[in-house]
Length: 80
Image (cartoon, rainbow, N blue to C red; front, side, top):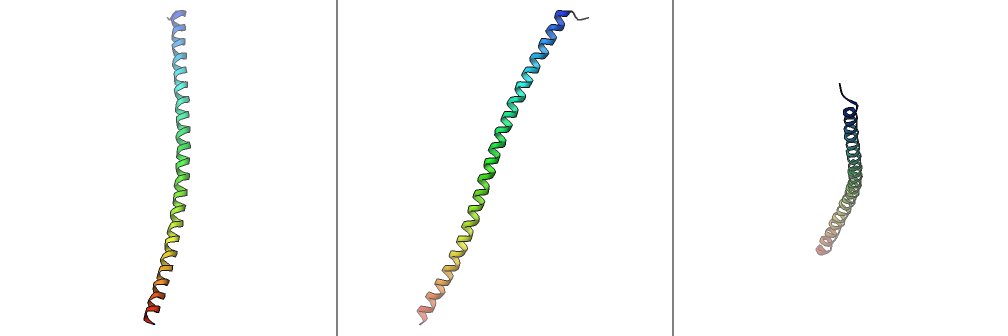
């Protein structure tokens, strides 16, 4: 049988282990929260970049259409 002092030592060791585990869990949760925040910011940045890309693609199409019209008008004016 364990003596009282041995049981107290075992109890203290278990409490210390629990304390370290709780601290480790808190650190892991903090790191997870930071990672989630970074992920959210990156997703937001990606959405903005995709929106800008769509706008640029639209602008490019409009410029190509304008260029085609101007080229056509230039050809017509040269033939006159």
